[in-house]
Image (cartoon, rainbow, N blue to C red; front, side):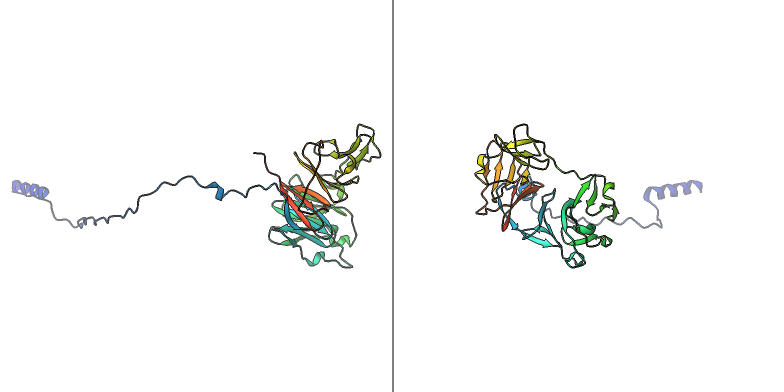
Length: 314
């Protein structure tokens, strides 16, 4: 009996036994995938589609000249107009004016905007009563105003980036904290002192000169002080292109020096005063201010502000 049982067990192992587990279902047929057309390798990206517009060194009309007030060019090349109760930034050939009730002119409001600065990608302007406006690229907003100062006038104010922190100097001092809030401080407590540019007396026989004069008449001709070069440059003999007063409007960089004369003529030198040329501006002959920053130079005429870009040498 034992032998018969062993034979039956061996037969069951050889042929398989029934089991309660279900049999593994047959795998489903795999559908054939359509590979489509053959892939074509891409060439190099056309960088010209993504590059900034080419630099234009030619003078061209930019925006209308404001009737009153001062112009300020920020370090990133934006143009700001400032005067009594008025602040505006030039955007695509138009002035975008700050229209806020806190700066409207009136017997109890006398806000005189005097300076502008670029900070963190925005434009900040400062005026009397420690009034600070901010342009964020879309709209103007009032960031601070100290009405306790009253309607007093102050003839000169400034705002600057002082080691990563905004400092304003008007009737009092103001400091902008990391949270965007301004606090009032004394002018003496500001970290960056106000430095007025001074000029040395030329090392030759010259006429009257004060430390604030940039133009002086000498025996050998007229001289212009270059702050960037820290030396006196020769001016055209006889000023055939227009007279200059002692403190003219001047802009200079590494390669150019521009001067606006009393007659509204814009003079330019590219060889440190060895020769001067008159800059033609499409018939505009009354340039009163020349200024620049951020790779742009502006010349304000009687009706139009012209602009040119400072291009890198190839």
